[in-house]
Amino acid sequence: MRSRPAGAPGDKAFVTESLGCVPAPCDSSVGVISNYNQRMKLLVAILLVTLLLPGCYYPTTPVATGPTLQQRFEQSWSAAMGAMADQGLSIHEENRGAGVIRGSRNGVVITATLFTRDDGRLQVEFTQSGETSNDPDLNSRVAESYNRRMGR
Image (cartoon, rainbow, N blue to C red):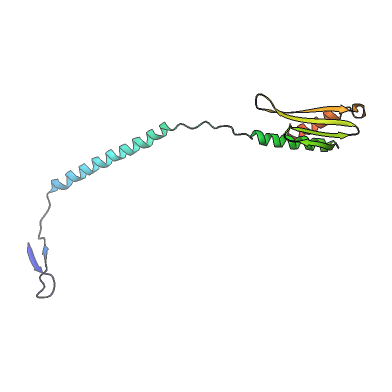
């Protein structure tokens, strides 16, 4: 090796140059093989994790979320009120807490009663009273209007 001054005279820093030193050929090839093996092991590990993780996935069963009882009650209540209006009844009584709507036309009284059944479903009943001879089919027409409004 030969040294020469780095800069101006009096500068004390020296730079050394290599004059033909060649590294041993065996040293570099061992490092390459070792590095290759490590990369392959890492690649295989990543591949296994990528393939095995989706096998652990268990999709959740979708739960049918329908309208709540309150929403179904509101829909049925509105449909019953609308059905009575469709048939020209004048509403005399609305009692949501009791689930009762009462209206009349020409002496015929129609009562709609909404209640929850034991199985959790909502039921609507229409009953007719008063002078039914004036319009004997009024109750069935109100029920048909209700079913139409409910999309049945």
